Length: 588
Image 1 (cartoon, rainbow, N blue to C red):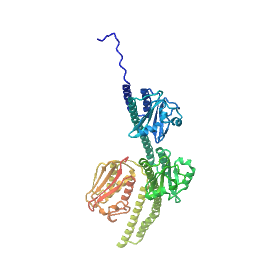
Image 2 (cartoon, rainbow, N blue to C red; image 1 turned 90 degrees about the vertical axis):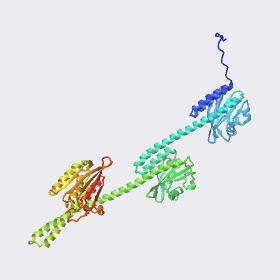
Image 3 (spheres, rainbow, N blue to C red; image 1 turned 60 degrees about the horizontal axis):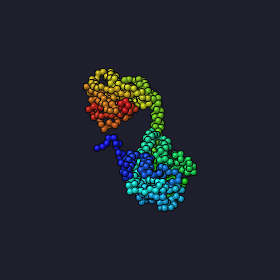
Image 4 (cartoon, rainbow, N blue to C red; image 1 turned 60 degrees about the vertical axis):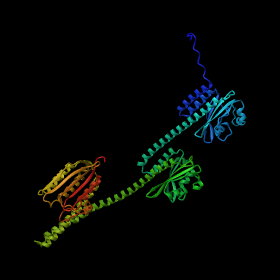
């Protein structure tokens, strides 16, 4: 029976092996949670030293062909654990090459194994040391070193603990390295995306290809730090530098050479001219490529800038720290090159459009001069024909013979027709030059007004108007009135042979435009001559049958075209005709 007055006995102390297992579990859990190398170093150098009562520790990591100190604890400058190469005859590289831990238990064991170590490093070896290689998936990660101030016999449990610790640390460091690489890749891709967004925004609206080439160099400078960008054009049979990144100003001799021009047969340019495709040169050789003073570059690429299948310019990129072009780097350079190519094409298109506008303006000036001549120089002879023809008729003794009377009528009719043609030319000219005054136009009210005017001119005719609801559109009211007058008067004219004329007007709506139709039951027209309907002075019926100068529909087309729309016509002989026009909706 337990005496309640006696104190409870203390729990038995855990064995050294159990303590190591507990330490290993704690370390394993802690390493599983970290993502940064520095945190891994802290766990190694704190927990491992505490578990074995070590006095100092160091972590050395593989960096290329070197083994470099990444973290220390408890060491000073007198330590023998220093940076070196993986080929050195030292404990760290030896443990990594064999992937086997090295244990130096007693005083002098380390120096006996490596007599030159202290002389090589200038440090003093500890009494006892453990050198633990860290290898993950066959790849050397680094070395953990623990030092002791007293001789230390490493028990099998301790060796097992240290081997497990090294394995978990290798995994944690590899995971941290991958995480860091991924984070850097995300940052790099984000920077690339932001740079491309800015560059694309500029490329969409920039027509100055030289300015865009300079901007492209700035973008590539973000993506490839320290790179050199150049924009060349052909001048005087040479590829001459026109735009370049500012780093070239550090090499004035090279800059002067490139500005003076490179021969067309320079290999990196000649290959591009032959294939028409971008060229990527790895392991740049200035002698082979025949461009002096370029020893600082390891790789170079060139992109052809075409216009009409002809290479007009070349964009080049030189890298000083990259010997080979990766698929990603090639894709980046191609993307920038394509944007420059589009800008160059846009510049050329703008130049051609300007030249066409200049020619058109010259033609318009000539047309205006011709119109002035028509209005002043031709009207006078026409008036003379009519006036003096009438005077001549009245001066002759009457009554006139039938043949003479017919001759006078032919001359008078021809003069009147010529006067109508002159009026048509002047009207078309004014329509083309009159500025558009765009407002909301109620087509229903406009049709109603024109219809009343036309009905008043033919009061004896029986015309049945069928006008559906019409929209309000954006346009010039005076010019659109001419269009409506041309179509409705056309329908009234060509239904005069019908006992009961029927004229329909309606509109159809789509997402971006209105279409207005005018249909009649008149004489119609032969569809094979449909293309002539909207041409100047084109008539499908004889002047003796239907009056007019043949300019109304041509004028209507000119007006609708200026409003951003189109005109159309459908018909058959003796079954009527349908004319229509489209107008874009506001904001379309």
